[in-house]
Length: 153
Image (cartoon, rainbow, N blue to C red; front, top):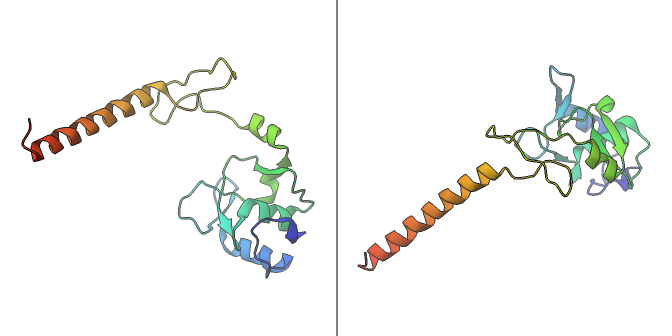
């Protein structure tokens, strides 16, 4: 079954991969088994044992019954969690539907519903407007600096 996992090192057996995953993980206070993969960022999907995604490799060796046509999803919402009770397989459409969307952006603005899809917009309009304003100010400063270097005002 390990051959169905894309990017997994061929030198692992089920027992060695299970030991490898458990060695690189630690339990958090909310019950998640969080893995430390090759990346340094916490809260994102991690790669381990070659170029395999940790949650998929964990599903294969800790849960079993892996179907490559389906996505592996965490019920807890933590992308770097490999706790077997938090892992499930869903179709891609079901995984997208079950993903919860935040009602506010990371800067605290209320997000708007997109009338075409009925879901929240990906980009907050207020944050986008502010980012464009900052970009225009930077560009204007660069142009003014370049003109000053050529003796123009």
